Amino acid sequence: MENNVLEQVSSYIYNRFCHDATGHDFYHMRRVAKMAKRLALLEGGDPFISELAGWLHDTQDPKLTENLSEAKQEVMDLFEYCQISLEEQEQILVAMEAVSFKTGHRIPRSLEGKVVQDADRLDAIGAIGIARAFSYGGAKGQALHSETSEETTIRHFYDKLLQIQGLLNTPSAMEIGQKRHDFLETYLHEFYEEWM
Ligand code: ADP
Ligand code: NI
Image 1: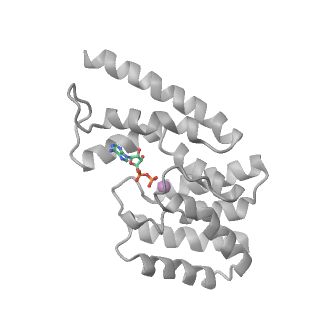
Image 2: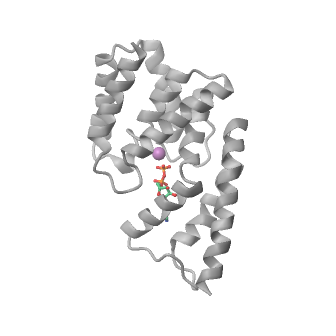
């Protein structure tokens, strides 16, 4: 039953995000879902709720959807189609809320919300995080780096990526994040050496 639901949800997400070029593609959703499940298992949260909320975490982001109420209705229809109980629906929506909305550093209300937020943040650092940042920068026509103070992708490292390790909610995410954070620093070190 749970596997069936996860299959339905992942194919909905595939159809919705397969053409995304803003760093929110299907594989981002899949990594967040898998990482949220892994963190839930380590932290004692509900792995099924966390994985589902991971798959769905970007479906109600205003910057990724033209019609927010339609996007919300699609998720409700999907819940109904998958016969997800009302209690589980509520838990999934609570777990998605702090991730979906740009409310600064809002701390999620549930453990499942915390692991989904952590999983989303972990995907912005490490080797994949660096690739996503340069891909986003390229799509926006932003320079890699600059010696003046314009918006660049290297500047995004300081504005956001290097802060992430200090914002993680759970000890398990902090452990995984440390290696990725160190990798950002190593990367920057090499970058400046090559920049000359
Ligand atoms: P999310 O919706 O997952 O919280 P964002 O939409 O802020 O994240 O960012 C999506 C991806 O694009 C992330 O990997 C992030 O690091 C990258 N990104 C966002 N803003 C910038 C920027 N100004 N320069 C480079 N990369 C960016
Ligand atoms: Ni995301």
